[in-house]
Amino acid sequence: MPALLAEVTRNGFVESLHHGSVVGLLPSGDVGVSVGAVGDPVLPRSCLKPFQALACLSAGAPLAGPALAIAAGSHTGENRHVELVMQLLGGLPVGLLRCPASWPEDDETRQRLTEPSRVRMNCSGKHAAMLAACVAARWPTQTYLEPAHPLQQLVLRTVEDLSGESVAHVAVDGCGAPVFGLSLHGLARAMQGLVRTPVAGAMRKYPEYVGGTGHVNTVIMQLLPGVVAKGGAEGVLVLATAAGHAVAVKVLDGNPRATTAIGLTALAALGFDVSPAKEHLSVPVLGGGQVVGEVRVVFQ
Image (cartoon, rainbow, N blue to C red):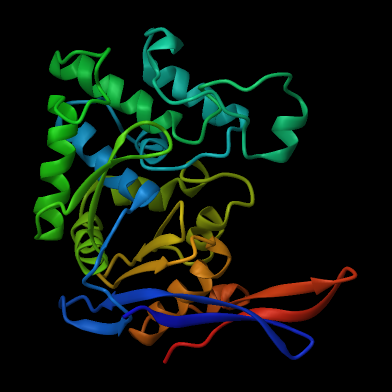
């Protein structure tokens, strides 16, 4: 069954509760943390992006450095991100991107714009990488999001190979790409395999392209060099160290406010030093502009 993972307090009163599951694997592959229903399938959402990037790389997409990091990331739509997405397109029309038009997540950038666009959408790096993979492999570009497309079948095989289990469900992600469901344990196991690939290396070296200015995934990777952090919609988060510790989190109510604190707490329980990011082990709750409580992790 799902377990209580975190609670929200306000002036000593428990105001809200976050239930879900979290699993942590030691570098040996042994389970070091298991709370809740870690064998139940979840939709990884954007936590799938590093594996989609790995499939694009396997298909021959010319991805390296920041370009590989943004293919695996959920960027905040800053100008540097858009410039890199355009480079990835390599002259292909922006209209080939099948992600929806969106405002950038970066507030400063958004204030300068008058309309949303596909290249500003946080998944545009992934979509541009998918198109680059299709061009390299001579696969159709118009249908690259269809589950039966050779690229999406390669993504599926990549996920199954690294997780060691069959995909439990196929759904459509918010950006339009297929998203493959697997157990939380399988997702953590897949992350252990990912840390040995060029994708993880690019994410660690260029965290500003995995998220962006102030993005919590970027901040965690900057505070904990060697750690890969990738969040997904509906309360999913994965963390992995270069040594092979891996954590996967799913909060059932879909709210992400506690996921980083939960993930770091689980990583610490595996014996990894998270003290440089200790300020993210809880989240302040404000009242009248002052701290009056916190979102705190409560699982053992």
